Image (cartoon, rainbow, N blue to C red):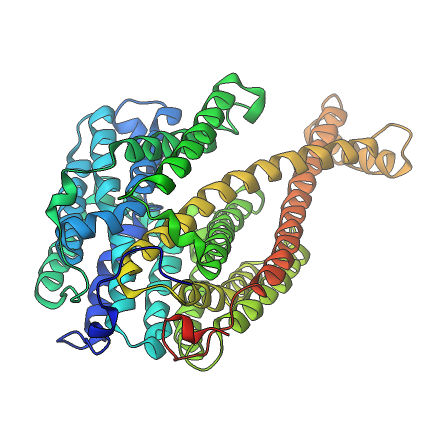
Amino acid sequence: MESPTRSNSPVDYAGWKPRVNPWLIAMTVALAAFMEVLDTSIANVALPHIAGTLGASTDQGTWVLTSYLVSNAIVLPLGGWASSVMGRRNFFVFCIVVFTVASFLCGAAPTLPMLLVFRVLQGAGGGGMQPMAQAIMADSFEPQKRGQAFALYGLVAVLAPSIGPTLGGWITDNFSWRWIFFINIPVGILAFFLVSRLVEDPPWIKPDRSRLRHMDYLGLSFLTIAMGGLQIMLDKGEENDWFASNFIRFFAVVFVAAMIGLVVWEWRHKEPLINLRLFRFKNFAICCFLIMLVGGVLNANTVLQPQFMQQLLGYSATTAGMALTAGGFALVFVMPLAGYATGKISARTLAVIGFTMFVLTFRYAGAVTTLDMSFSAASFLRVIQMMPIPFCFISITTAAYVGIPREDSNQVAGLINFARNLGGSILIAVTNAQVTTRATWHQAQLQNSMQSGSIAFQRQSQGLTGFFDGRFGSHNGMTMALASLYGQLNRQAQMQAYQDVYMELSWMSVGLVLLAFLLSKNKPGAGSGASAMH
């Protein structure tokens, strides 16, 4: 298939290599990307402190997250266009500066409205850093070593949101919520210095400032409205009973209408902000869908397990975060192995292996997620849940570049990261809603066994009544016994809801295994062109 975008002379650039060690470049851009990805989750546990300090309600405080995610989602797919205007390195450096300055302003914000404005600015700067880091890695390494580079990027993309809540909670408890933003400043300064000195644009990236005069304002408007509508719908859906609320239905319609408008307009536009014609490549289209679900599974899993431990096992936020730490160590070990494997085994085969592992790990999670689960069991669960991530993440990211011209790597990186973040937002909302729905269903089923005619219920209530009578007095025993039984029922229903959601995720993973077989089977290390496919 021919490239849907114009290419000057890709053959002339076949022998290009960066002037410094590509691993030094990879670590440099990974540092900046880690800082940005960390900020998508580090503020979560600090919201009550932020709201209290700035005199806002908890609901108003959630806009600290929403404002960042909306602006981040808008800028993510625009990296390719921005790089074509000002050059990839210049755009990357510009994003680092914007993100670092905005981080300082967020930490110093005296009011909630000002904090929200600065979070929008911070999200906009951060939105360009993820895809540019990935695109720089893709172009800096030879095709046969690209998987190892993506292993480093995958470690950043997976590890940062995992440790974000734990780090944010520790900083907030021991210092102030403002320091979750201030810690970005020295990292941002270091990243600015290193990127400016070490990173260079390949010869096929030639800035064309004339494109700024013909900017696709209508496409940008559609994208902004669509992402704003989606994020508000997802953030406020559970609070407003989802589609039973006119508020949620309105933003759902806004999202769908704006998204349709965006696709139609961008497909027809001669110089679009987002090159949707890349979806003509079968591999790329499938990879975008797969990475969206991988991102969804990763983010949902990062929320589900600590949420279960805090709600039903009584763990503090810090302790729950510590239970996730072992999974981070597992990633550090497995990511390089998976990266090495991409140079020896086809991306399709690795994706199938990874999704098969997902099926097994989610079924295991459904079996061991109980009310008497120990800290060590929770830590081990996190380890095995992290094991499939490298094989899925690296293989899909590698496969997305198969058959794509090198000059389109910026657009590929932007859309892949956009799809991953979008999947994360959607599946977090869906799984949380499903936990609530299934808990309500199980609660109704368990209440049927609490009828007065049930022998088991009578025995348990009588035993508890006798216990409470002996300790607190006979006039309170029955009431306290019923309250205790009802509390146990609710905890049991919640536990079964989490088990159900894990089983649903395992069935979704079965579908991903089947979908992965549709990927073209690339020859490991053969390059990114169409000849590498069979």
